[in-house]
Length: 425
Image 1 (cartoon, rainbow, N blue to C red):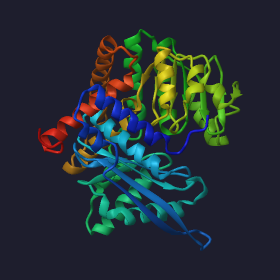
Image 2: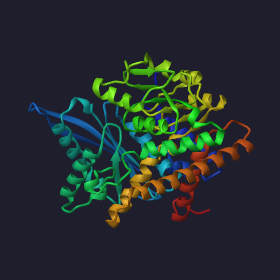
Image 3: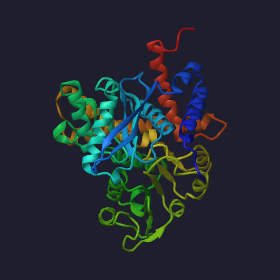
Image 4: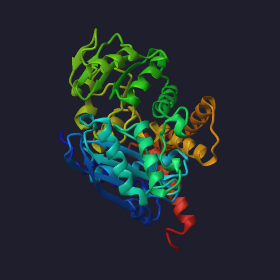
């Protein structure tokens, strides 16, 4: 089923409207949350290695800052577009509110295929983007971070360029930086670590033993590959892994580190020794206990949801499940850990990095891990309790996504109310 490019943003608006109604909140809450406060669109000319000049289009969406500065990643991807960036910024607002980080939601991106660019070209692109949006970002205004196809090196270039523009060092303008440039230990694996914690809590909630669980991971980039290693360490069996080329499947299990090495050497997980190659549709139908979509938006549609056999779906990606698919998973009794909770480990440790930058005092790996554990466990329990409470009192089926949005929107509405954004009765 093809997905229109504006479906994600329309879906998140519909979800917000539904939750505001369920909570019986002021209509102004939805009116404020339904659109970003600002979306910046910039053109970035880059001199390519062959001497030609190519112009790329970049975006920065700033959704809502009632809880604090805007926060969210910057992705380099050929499919980045206006409506997608808007939707992603809304999800960031919800995500920060769910885990209690004092940030609002932002998101950025450049429409580009970074795999076809040299390091020199990527550096020029990253620096050009920062110059174009410099007046709209800052450590007290909007703090970008890595996302799809961006990394610590790109964040270093961006922080350096912003400091040049401003005339002073402001390394806290971005998070996800290298350690020797103000980065935090644990940031690279933070998203996967947060996903692992929520999977562990979800498995415990439904009585699933991780040591006996079969796991399928869609997307084998940074988050997917690290998560596969983490969950393998709990005794689970990685039976299927996919990337943009297809999927590798072995019901007896596969070694995640060997899979990653195979991908580095061949460019894909397919043809991994001992595995059979599956299509993406076949991947979603494999026999597994835990399914982890860790790629892009709208990967689980209604047809694919109908074939899913997992007991838990853990959204390591942002917006991987369409609204129609959500309904199917809920009706099937599958416990879905929503993206705004499941993958919030990244923004949580980004918050830790921002705090450390502000104080110029850096924590140990043990301190970061303990703080992340506490945040994710408390957030999961709050969402799960809201979900189970709603299951008891709602006549229609509800999901963990409903619980997460209820928690986030309540916190946002409370902040709007005390700041006077909702007017007076």
